Every structure is written in C-alpha cells, then in structure tokens.
Length: 139
Image 1 (tube, rainbow, N blue to C red):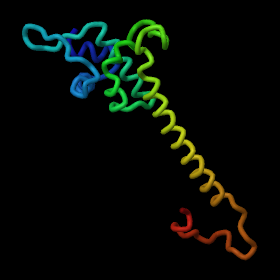
Image 2 (cartoon, rainbow, N blue to C red; image 1 turned 135 degrees about the vertical axis):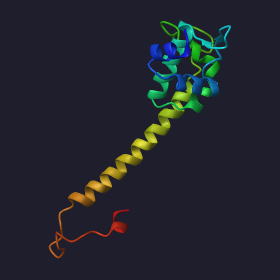
Image 3 (cartoon, rainbow, N blue to C red; image 1 turned 180 degrees about the horizontal axis):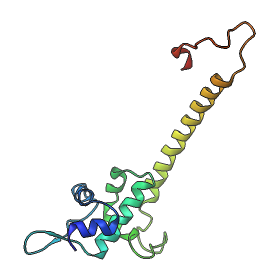
Image 4 (cartoon, rainbow, N blue to C red; image 1 turned 45 degrees about the horizontal axis):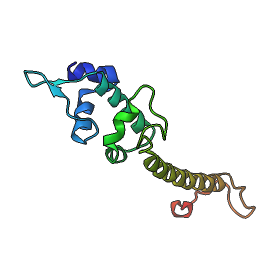
C-alpha cells in the first residue's frame, strides 16, 4: 500500500512514516516501479508499535537504540521475555525511562507540596492576609 494508506492504517501521517524511516526506526520499504514507497501489513504493525511506545513515554532515541528489535514487539502476540533470544531487549531501556519518570514524579510532588503549603498556609496574626507574596519567595 502507498504511504498515505499505510499511515492512515497505522493512525498517523505520511510525514511520521518518513520521520521514523529517517530516524532508523522503520526500515526503508520496498519501492514500486515508479519509485513510490510500498508498505505491507508488517510495516503498518511496526508503526503502530512505534507509536504506542512513544505514547508510553519512550523517546525516539530510546527506540533507535533497539530499532533492530522493534519487529519482535510487532508480532501478534508479542513474545514473552525468555521465549525468544533477545526478546527482552527493551527491559533496560524501559527501566531507565521508569527511573527518569519516578525522579520527575518525585520532583513534581515536592513542587506541588511546596506550592500547596505556601498557598494554603494559615496567615500569621501579624501578617495582612491580602498582602501580595513576592515571587522570589515562592521558590
């Protein structure tokens, strides 16, 4: 199928397919006699996997580091870790991304608690409750 049809089938755009190809996530498809890209169901399934992994918070760089294994995740059903050699190639990438997400959640939780504490802290008797708090004191 042509690029527009493949993109529609995968829920994305032709530009995204070209981008994935340029970044090495999607192998270059075969070409028709007129030079147009010709995608099959396997490529469409792979694009769906790429989109799902990106939506889960992995980055293009994360996926690029394991691009040679993305096709394993496009299998229906995907193999279980240990059932196919190197099927768990993403565990290290996912664990690293989870650690980054955990650190960001911790940072945001502290930020939220600090903001809530400053916002909802009962006013002192000596302090005007309607006074404007200087922006630099909110850090």
